[in-house]
Image (cartoon, rainbow, N blue to C red; front, side, top):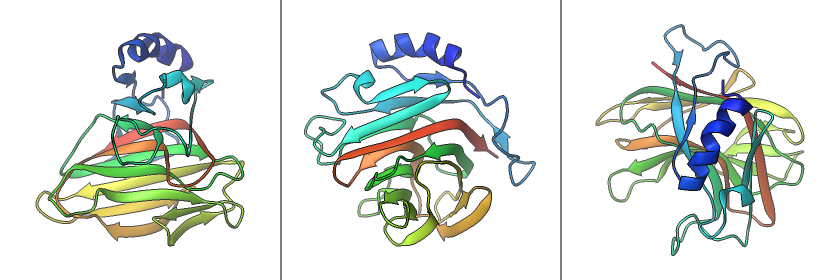
Length: 225
């Protein structure tokens, strides 16, 4: 598990140089993994934010909590990009086969609507195929609703409290693998991925809605088999 002191020493220089931020392996898991074959692993990430702003204008790390926020009028993360505004932790660990998992606790303030808070992005993929294997989105209904895409409900009543999400992915080289989504330790969704690709995890706010989007994260653990 990363600590504020470790993060501060590394991130001051990293943010100044726009370099990846290094995160140590978790010292204590948020929960025991479903199988003893899962092991926590070190990871690095880069903060993606509106290209014309300093990282500190849309991201902070204090007291072990990553806070990410963005506004609907913000610029994309690269100049000229047609994508929506975002502030996200982009994991630098890429994979095309094998099992990986992202796990962490998330806090969404009341009223936030529209952002993707966790996703698996398919960075290198066959032309014409979908860009993501999973997108967990927040909607301002039923006390805050977390959904895969816009229709598959993971949980309701999520506002103003910490909840745990675990996304497991078993990728198959040359074929289709399986994604599982857990909410507070309970398996909620199982579906096939979008086929062969090189992909990576992201968490933060990729904003498709209106106004301000904010999400906070703590106890992030990266698992692999």
